[in-house]
Amino acid sequence: MIRLTAQSTDDTRDIATAIAMLARASDMIVLIGEMGSGKTTFSQHFAHALGVTEPVTSPTFNLLHNYAGSRLKLHHADLYRLERTGELDDLGLTELQEAGGLMLVEWGDVVGDALGTGLVVKLAATANADAEDLATVRQIDIDWRGLQWETRWDKLRTSLTNWATS
Image (cartoon, rainbow, N blue to C red; front, side):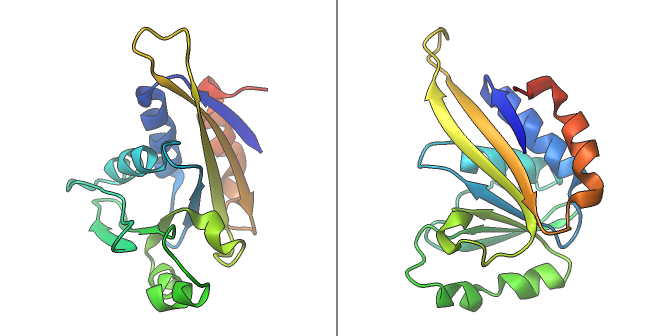
């Protein structure tokens, strides 16, 4: 696991960008965190790094937004409102992924391991009492399951060194 500390929104942007630069077609990236932990902010910066120019919003009510980035096609899902695991199949995420789309899934922990292999990014916000603007510090833990990120793991760790904590 890689543990990071983002002291600002700029840090969150830079972390999302570093991950996006290593992302490939058919990747699954699962975002986990409580309400307000920064999942949508991360998603916006991640999408921008892929060359998405249109506004990126959380697909909470639509469940899925599709974007054509200049680098990769991005499918952005939000599973917060899923009422049953069967609805996951109805979204067709596996088919979109198999067709070469990169999947970025907020609230992916709602369906446990049903999303399969991929990168797991857990965000947790904590108040920064020392910050003048009362900014939020985010702890970001990154892990992977399956083999999808195995060959890129060391490169990912190196690209995130600036924010690494013990």
